[in-house]
Length: 400
View 1 (cartoon, rainbow, N blue to C red):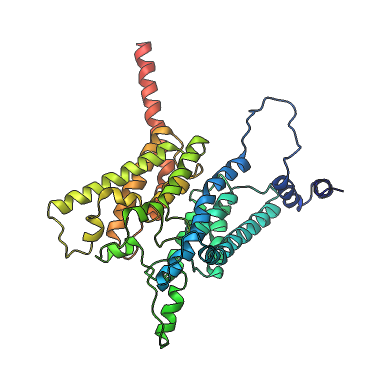
View 2 (tube, helix red, strand yellow; view 1 turned 90 degrees about the horizontal axis):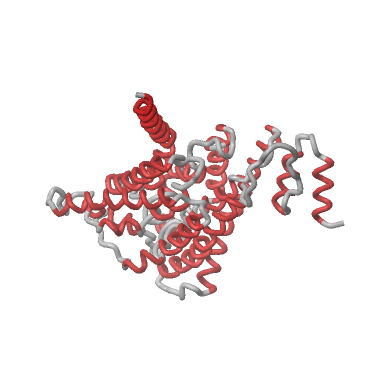
């Protein structure tokens, strides 16, 4: 008896019971459903929620693999014993550190999804397939697994399930998880010791009085600039991603390719991506003009990031990753075309604003996207109202 037949029999056996959603989810995850609709008119299309989620995951895979190599590369480079980027030594460190993050993220998140599906008696939703991949890519390499598990549970339950599940949440679940980690465990989410594997452990050993051990600095470009120091990385390093940072956020090149893939498959909104970039460039250029005008001196704690060439904001930190993979979330983003332009522009504008004026946490894209998630329905409301007023004016003109 084939596995498909066995699963189908289990599905039929538990049909109508509380455990039916769990078996249905397993069956449809492995095989195409054989159920067909009868009667009435239905929209026929090749895509569904599962296929949509799988396309986004495909776009994320290059960032995941690159992040594994970069984790090991940054580790050995910080130790003073650099290895080739595409070496097995670098990749093995990445596998050991990143793979457990992926397993915990999916394990905890999908378990909670199954539990809520059984309790509520509805089908298991595929929305967490993308969230489960996003979470390991937006956290520091050495984040304790138990912290990640707690944060995932919080993000899925409070960020999504309490609103009714996939399609009903007002905040991006992955960013809700990251925000929880940042505010609940700030020492593990910021500073110059969390972005390179082994840096925190070395710092603790030195603090305990260990001798003969050199500290590992894992400071990011944003952290260095926020402290008034010059960046030690070239533009090429920033663009290709050979820099410390969250697991999957460093390579602007791969993120750009992933964004083009999402646009080509009509999954991601090019309007949101483009308007976010425009908003960031405008805010960065304004800061550059303020510095050029002499209103901010080198003694100011804001000088480092304000004086950074405005276009470089696009290739450092998590800006590119957030704009491509999270600002475009169709559930929490604006739905109207004009609203997408406004929504994206404000995300880019506010991201750079927060990045510059918050030296303790020189990364603003997470908070900017969450803020605009809240205002997205309001933006759409006023866009629709404006369209209604225009049409009413047309009717009055024609009937006059």
